[in-house]
Image (tube, rainbow, N blue to C red; front, side, top):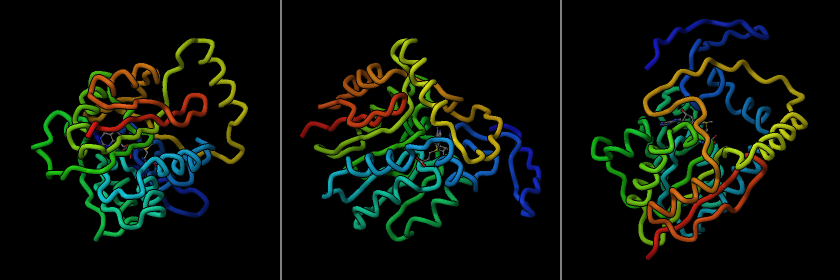
Length: 248
Ligand SMILES: C[S@@+](CC[C@H](N)C(=O)[O-])C[C@H]1O[C@@H](n2cnc3c(N)ncnc32)[C@H](O)[C@@H]1O
């Protein structure tokens, strides 16, 4: 864990507590800026959450959300499936605190944990009963490829037969030609509204600043973990939703 330096910033007459350094994935120096800031930074954020939420089967009862952040993906899934019990995991207490304000305590179990550490030794954490679906958005790309593979294997082991895993994440361009295209599109879409201050990202646990892998490589990792029908179902240039299911 980096040495945390808390400073106080006065902005628009309002006092905010911001961290000089942040964990990979927290994105903004003031974690309370996440919900507004991510929509400015990623104009397709809400479309991505909606598309991912629709991948969860309507019969799902138990869901695991890895890197749940402020709870937006779980909350979006609950809009469609209010019956679900959700286990929401994140290593950031500041992000989890915001998720706790959005998700009903009776239907949510919050686990403060590094999903890399969980992938290596799940017995060291509160047990998670087999789930119908595992989801994750904008989080797993912080792991090395070897740890992505380990996490995919552990997710597979925690799904019931027939259960599914869907991940929404930035992907590495397969060719420099695509990288130029992705960059141009991002520039053309660049935010008109001001983006909140970004923190200085310091590696934390198993997460590092972006460790992108191509979509094709990640589909191969899912197949190697045992998943079937592995494919992407949504893509917007360098952002993709991909996954597969556990054979019955
Ligand atoms: C960009 S946010 C996305 C949050 C949420 N999934 C969403 O789409 O709004 C990424 C989240 O992943 C979490 N995260 C990153 N690496 C992690 C790790 N190794 N273990 C647990 N949480 C992690 C961060 O703390 C952050 O809350």
